[in-house]
Image (cartoon, rainbow, N blue to C red; front, side):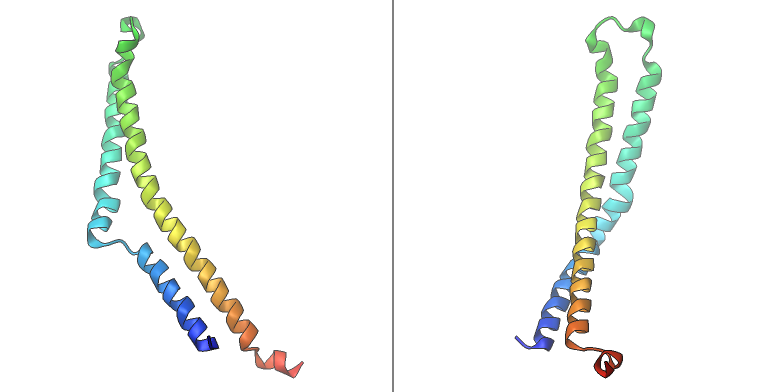
Length: 118
């Protein structure tokens, strides 16, 4: 493999990682709007449920179930967002690694004029 073929190969991999960062139109609506909105709704519902809960009225574990269910919903929505952000973070980390690989390869195979003078 020649130097230019190697660079093209790395650039192709880098393009794939950058593409993974760019959400599809459906994903961007989901990531920016719907999933975040659902998390906020779940948080608000948990807060409302907590306001309804009164220490004087708790007599059995079943009385805790509504707030428990609301908090579980918060966790589920948070995990959806975290998975989406983890996917973006992984692609960005891979893209940075590929940029570093490209930079190191170019430096190694294309020394600057100052390096050649030494």
